[in-house]
Image (cartoon, rainbow, N blue to C red; front, top):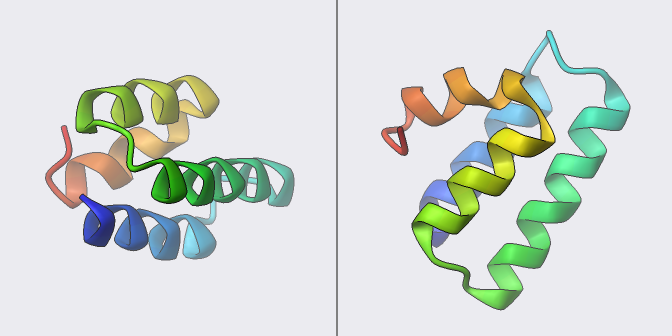
Amino acid sequence: MKEKLKKVKEHIKKHKDMDEAEKSNTIKKIDEWLLEDKADGTIVAELTELSKKVVPILEEIGLL
């Protein structure tokens, strides 16, 4: 899961539809999860709550 989260972070940094605040908040949350080693389902649910714009990224890397 850690590798997938790192991929999500990289995609978020390049995502054109997210503003800088959304990107920053989402990346901070992912960094927290990497430290906490959260379960897959929890991470996906919380990411989609932060920004619906993350859904295509999650689909692209196979988390949805």
